[in-house]
Image (cartoon, rainbow, N blue to C red):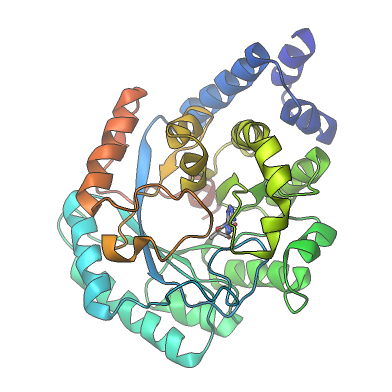
Amino acid sequence: MEKTKKILDKEQLEKEDLIYLLSLENDDEIELLRQKAEQTLFGLVGEKVFFRGLIEFSNICTSDCLYCGIRKSNPNVSRYTLDEAEILEQVQQCANLGYGSIVLQSGERSDNLFIDFLVKILKKIKQMTISEKQPEGLGITLCVGEQTEENYRRLYDAGAHRYLLRIESSNPELFRKIHPPEQKYETRVKALKALKNVGFQVGTGVMIGLPEQTIEDLANDILFFKEMDIDMLGMGPYVIHNETPFAVYSDYYEKNKEKIYKLALKMIAVCRIFLKDVNIASTTALQAMQPVGREDGLMFGANIIMPLLTPTYRRKEYQLYEGKPCIEDSTEDCYFCISNRIASIGRTIGLDAWGDSKHALKRK
Ligand code: 5AD
């Protein structure tokens, strides 16, 4: 207990401290960690939670990540791409509900047709969401994988200003084990740098609790986030999907579920304490493991939540992992449910505002 207190009182944490905190097992000590993360968030960023309405607009994917349910080799997924009208309808709902931002997420594709389609949609979204409440329109985050710098620039110029691209693991060896051979760690890092060059606010993140991942790996991930000077973090527990090659890890997963969940919360807290003013999302994967997962994420230092805006009739076809929540719900259901969840932990919602990361604004 004393050692934990001493570390939490330090101005600057070292790698060993990160490892120590991530390794905490005792509930009272984990509570101290949580409190410190919450204090850091409230002191440096504020208690408000910002919404990013999430539209999973296509599950077509050219990648074959070994852990992911929509990998191209999964024949059981019925593939879809929302058309322009379907996307814009969700965007309008998002604006009406007062969500300040949307996230457009899809499987990986980098052909011209795809980029052209996105550019067109981005411009329309901007045009149609400029209002008195939102003079610059909705904030737009993209999450559409590795692209060339030129394509990133086209997407930025069309109106997106944030981009999420998880490194998945900053350990090149582990990265290699969880991806097909054509997917290179170096390419991912290069893509993250290209996004910065172009001017995006950049988010990254990792899966927590991957088979063969160590606590030291996670500590190194945090140092990687710092070194890359990232603005936003989206991290969640690794959750198994039975129609992937990683189904072979089902014993590992069943045995370690609770540990993985706790580790994900500790990771959020340690990132908040160490990285201070970045935006951190409380991700849906947390709720796939625990009904109150996203509330827990917020209480451990996250300040962003991504209510689903994907049309209900497509939600079941976008399952990266098992147990995805809210599959039968409507956009309004998700709004009311998440609003109530935020109120239940005594926090408030930042409506009709982008809620950019303080870290990014400071850099500007
Ligand atoms: N468990 C948890 N997260 C996953 N993702 C993909 N598959 C899984 C899984 N089985 C995450 C990846 C990706 C993000 C969109 O979803 O980290 O970057």
